[in-house]
Image 1: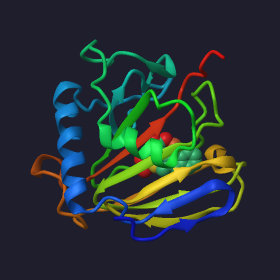
Image 2: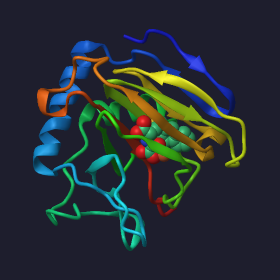
Image 3: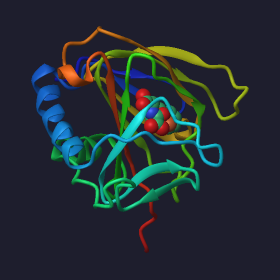
Length: 212
Ligand code: MD3
Ligand code: FE
């Protein structure tokens, strides 16, 4: 199943085509069922209320949200008020295989990019622990992903992420600036009509430390 591996600096690993088409379809079916129960919503920026271009939902016991009050993890969907749907087993299996971390992730953030959506350069720092890895899965249209370094001014590299690709952000790369410059609409046939053209990205995160 694994097509190869690109190991970057500081714990960054790209597994191109880790999920084959059949595995993408079965994972997508579970994600679409989760989106039925916990619809994609439009997050807004803290304070300004400016909408993000990416729509979001979550799976797992905690979900990352952004609203006027700030960025944080919450156990319920901000619109429905219901708990987030469970995380698919394919994702906890992925974490078990590549997370090299004793505790399972609580959160799987689901990002949906329409043809014009992007994500500016940022670091993921709302988790209580920043040493657990983040694992990402791309589904649907290709995207130009940008990975920088520990400072906003660090040099960046860009790479194309395609449907089925997995990225593991371990080690120092977990704290690196990163973003999505653009998607390439119409480069995948995976997503259903109501989400096409578009891209779904799943990120698995460990949020809370576990009491020793
Ligand atoms: C590098 N998502 O949700 S996934 C995010 O494609 C996010 O939707 C992007 O950045 C997306 O926060 C990128 C790959 C990724 C995820 C987390 C990282 C790269 C990362 C954390 C640290 C460094
Ligand atoms: Fe991020």
